[in-house]
Image (cartoon, rainbow, N blue to C red; front, side):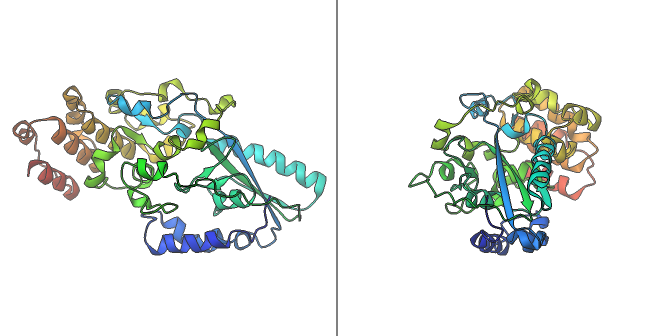
Length: 348
């Protein structure tokens, strides 16, 4: 529980983040900045903010082991199950209704999609602290927590903020494959694999493609290496259990997904928000990083895909798996400028 005016420093940090352009294409962060910086700007009547965390700790000893299986795709732990938005919001509403019925006042509930800075509010409410990777860390659950918020007009007893317990540790900063942390506690989303594979709409910048490896949706590296995970617990909620089909899906099969098959495979998951074309773009980057020449046939088939985004990624993947002379023979009469740029780079 915390006061709505408890995150003044977070507002300043957000302003600096936006001024640096570190939010990339996430324009919604800029347009909603004023409301994010102060919960009272979102709802003027709020007097108390209740933050709740739900553990989704993975059942694997090493969530990063999948990165060594280059013929498979690595999907972030949180996205391997049903979409957390759809699970958490009804539960928050149940708690909020109970609060309103027993304590009076009005309530509103938020899960990630609204202009609410859940992580700094959670730190102010005593759930944990924002680590050097900017995510919340709990002494009890480590890095694996979903967050939700209940705003209420009631004035309730407030909890004290959690102190930072990162100490001198830099594990999360140093492990990042794309150096997305220019300094501890500072994230440049434009370099973050989660941003690049989920939020970024165009071709992934060439400088980051090799570092992405086989990560096809999100990235868990900075979360997984946190030493506080020694206290982490396996999530006990069956709805957050990973779907077996999403633990280590074959790249060869994912590359064959059309829009209908993509929607069917990722129904009710967070992955669906990326859309088929962006997702297959990611799969092709992983194919290019696989070192497996047998996967070249999948990339070659996608040279004629309806999406320029996919065709361009297919060119890059083939440039990594196929000799230049054979690649040159595949050059077709491409009409899209961005794909022609990929061909020019591949054949340079």
